[in-house]
Image (tube, rainbow, N blue to C red; front, side, top):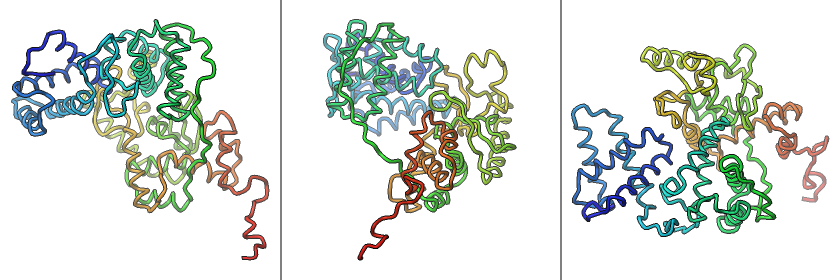
Amino acid sequence: MDSTDPVKPEKIERFWNAYRACVEAHHIPPQRSGYYVRWVQEFVEFQPETKLRDRSAADIERFLKFLAEQAGAAEWQAKQAAYALRLLYEQFLPAYHPTVAGGSAVETGEAGFRDRILPGEAERCQGPVLQRLRAEVRERHYSYKTETTYLEWVRRFLAFHGYADPHQLTPATAIKEYLDYLAGVRYVSASTQNQALNALVFLYGHVLHVPVGDMGNFQRAKRPRRLPEVMTRTEVQALLDQLTGTTKLMALLMYGGGLRLSECQQLRVKDVDIEHRQILVRDGKGQKDRVTILPEKVVGLLQEHLAAVKAQHERDLAAGHGDVFIWPALARKYRGAAKEWGWQFVFPARSFSADPRSGAIRRHHQHESLLQKAIKTAARKAGIVWPVGCHTLRHSFATHLLESGSDIRTVQELLGHANVETTMIYTHVLNRPSVAPVRSPLDTGSPL
């Protein structure tokens, strides 16, 4: 938007609607996105003689300093304004193009991919469809991560087809064309292509109520057969030695109980049974519950951690907060449960944040990036040269259990695998595809 040239009102309105949609696409709820729009509008008014695209970092710093010096201005407002400008310059303006002909977006960016999303365009052209998609996902109690993933794929699908009305497309043909494009042009992995397929089948089946029909043989992304990366016991110990505090406790639970990162994040106090040394994993992958091990060596650290979390929870209650997210139907059935100690997250966030769905201000669980970054840093310090992530701890848990003689069916139950064949992949490090170990011919009579 040019603040110096005369602009038609409808063009201005379209700019702000597109920016607001971009803000909401970055997990800001609709009831709060208007505040971000207002911060950018104030930035426009602060220096009207300069175009938005021509403003410098010094201009932004002067504006934020001006806000901070205003009487009654809170620190969180300055942070919100700063984030609004970050979204404007890092996400919105680089991709925004005011010219849209015939309802199809102009391709932007160096990649030039057909499914590149123009910020706000999907909401402008097919807003009701996206709103119904959100409603259907939430009605089925899918996770927020699933909701954002499905929305992202539908936006890409709409961008690929020029933001046409999906009702007017032939579902089987349109989906097949896009899946072929993902495999043949974007070279995505098989899991990514399947994720897109699931989102689009959900769109047509549950949102538009249009049968998809037979898509025929679309181009499948190749699924390479890869073995899981597994640390030795020495490497695990070296990694854990480099961690401290909460991140170390989370890593200990993930390795000691075979937890996924999301399962560790979402642990509730009531699901940790210290007396029986068990962890009840609620709503794991595939919306399945399971019971796994609470390691004996973790108990002392966990009790100390929970004491600190409980003290924090009591302070939150005294300040008028202390509630945590639980499903709305459950909250209606058990009023007040959201503030009970048992429902609190074992690993709560350090600060309050807005719930991306309801907008409620509460203390959520810790963000996944906290442990991800800590694990990568610890692996580097421990001298582990190959890539190590949070899921490597789960792979190592399964492999080391099998090495120590645990029954594979038991390991399958602890991991929550639906099929034992999935668990069988961990036998690759045991060096014993049969009962007797296999030795290399170099070790059995080679002339060297």
